[in-house]
Image (tube, rainbow, N blue to C red; front, side, top):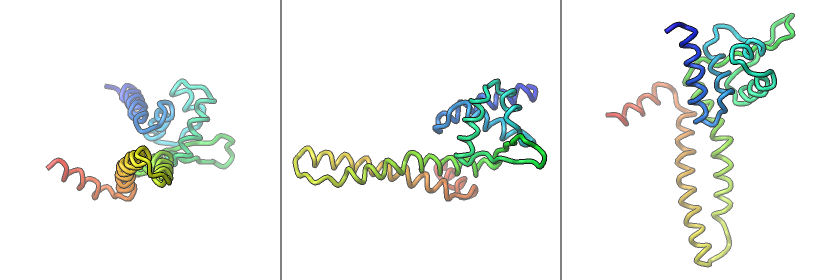
Amino acid sequence: MTYDEAKAKFIQTWGTLATQWGINRTMAQIHALLMIAPQPLDTDVIMQELQISRGNASMNLRDLLDWGLIYKQLRPGERREFFYAEKDVWKIARQVARERRRREITPVVEVLNELKNIDDSTPEAQEFRKVMNNLSGVVEFADNTLNAVIKAEENWLMGQFMKVFR
């Protein structure tokens, strides 16, 4: 397999994998391209490499910046902006977990906490509270798991995985 074939396969695979993390395919493909690029890339190079429009590139670069997965570099005398990605995979995993927690888990926890506190003693309300408490337990477990990933260092996390497979 040539470098170009391996690069294309990685970008495609990362795009598919990241959709399972809540990141759209193009956003993930841009991220993959920037992760393997030896130097920061400008929007024109990203567009050319991935065969995407300027609007698509700009929107997804902005989203990647918002997620904290890429950074912008300005160069003296250049009007273009250059972008580069974090290369430490553990930092990437922690950042994705942090963002997913902020965007998905925290709002659900807030709503469930509000819904558990209804003032009604009917059988329907009791059943509703029971279901909300059960859901809350699952969401809290997910929240605690994401917190562990966010706070984890590589060695600790690998140790936890190894315990599972012993």
